[in-house]
Length: 638
Ligand code: HEC
Image (cartoon, protein in one colour):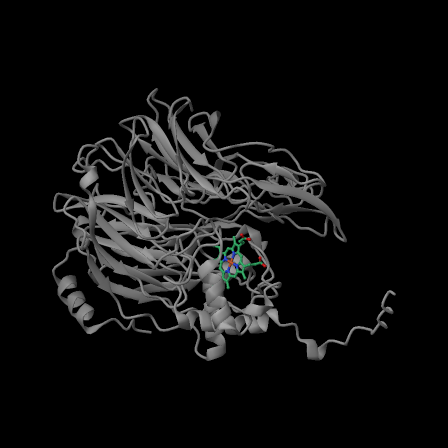
């Protein structure tokens, strides 16, 4: 389907694409051609125009509003190639001028993946989110919610190829690909749907799959003997949330496989469960396993070691790999010996053992610690920088018909906060720590001038002193920073760009409209605002539109069937079913940590459709249920 963009924007697009050579500047040192800038994933930029002395005068230059009805989850990375930014939503990919926010093109995904999802899924997609794209040789590569892998011409947005890779049963692409030497590398997710994780290489020019490595070994495969489950619970999990890294010198691709499934099964899932929560070194050409490190064996807290691994040479000359997990630790590994050099906490850690029938407070909880953007590294300071979510949850295990099942209990009495920690990259010593008002899931960016850019989900864009952690500047970005945060230079001018708005699973208040904002020293209080024609609503019929709007705005947190998922079931709230006025009032006054989605992000029509959907989900089909046996009422007491 061609994207219906405004006439004005179409005009800009035509003139811009003629005057703008992309291949020539591809993979220049200032470019971000992976979600973490380059194959090392250090996220460091060798730029020094914005400095500790002048960062206080940085202001917004422009923003482009991504007007998508109903899209609430926005966790994309940003790429910057030549002079173009690329950003993904669940529904589309946008190419934006990196200096003035003019839209170059918008590609709208045509969903066509398998329609057989696990029972209860009426949608064809598993998660309404995308972490972004990878780039190689004039092409943009990304995975989709229905399991397609797509290549676009980076200059025009025209499709080059697409392949459907998912089998249906819970498989989806959220993670971000990287591409190198004619190959695209990406892992399928998600563990928590019970998939058998796999990491794959595809031919960058045709989309043909070249190899796959299953993260869950079966039968006689090496590692299968580390699973000790009851036969009724087969080994599963090991999916991918973030991006991989690569060493072009050794031809190793480093892939982070996440948690085992079922997520919480103390006393029944008894082994180390290889290769879950492991960083894998795979041959980029062969797909063969060279070596691995399992950070969190027998995970019972859904503590994915799922962030992007980073490669760096420490001050003492060691070739290192660092990876951070949702258990709040940053692991430093020596790549020559594969030995663990340090495991340093980047947030509160307590009670990490197994849990019993009395709830205990465990830190971090399921949605604490390091999420998709693990760490950054500055060769100038020799420090690793990690942003984390400081949030403890309760855990208990209860007897059920299927044996004891573990249950996480989110902890709303102490809402989530965040931390940024600087760690000596050679020995793991903590250099400084800064507590943020809200969770930090956006990427950190150390610069040559000694700045560290960061942000939290309450919309604070922060500039810290990279050596001391002192806050030098704080800008209200107007919405959550959930992932993409980068700095780059075009025509000798340094910029900072952020994906702003929307929600992620980690939440503490502000959602705001989806946009990409660009900041610079020449910004102003009246930045240029680029508006696009709204995307057409997902779903052809009103009933499908209601399903899809609920799906993209609510299901990631409350479940496709509203029976609860990461957050509570909505079944108590039947008064909201079919009642847009009540739902609007609820959404406008809901206490944190549920994000404020209305007003600001969702439109009145979105809310009407969601209320409509809740009518189906929350009203029990009473007509088809037998009436309960009538007991005579007891006589009134005298
Ligand atoms: C980012 C995650 C997230 C998203 C997205 C989200 N919610 Fe929530 N929601 C929460 C959290 C967390 C709570 C619990 C808040 C509390 O109890 O303090 C909650 C609570 C609720 C409750 C109250 C449940 C009860 O019985 O206590 C309702 C109703 C609700 N949400 C409706 C919605 C609807 C409708 C949508 C989609 C428009 C939505 N939520 C989207 C996280 C989310």
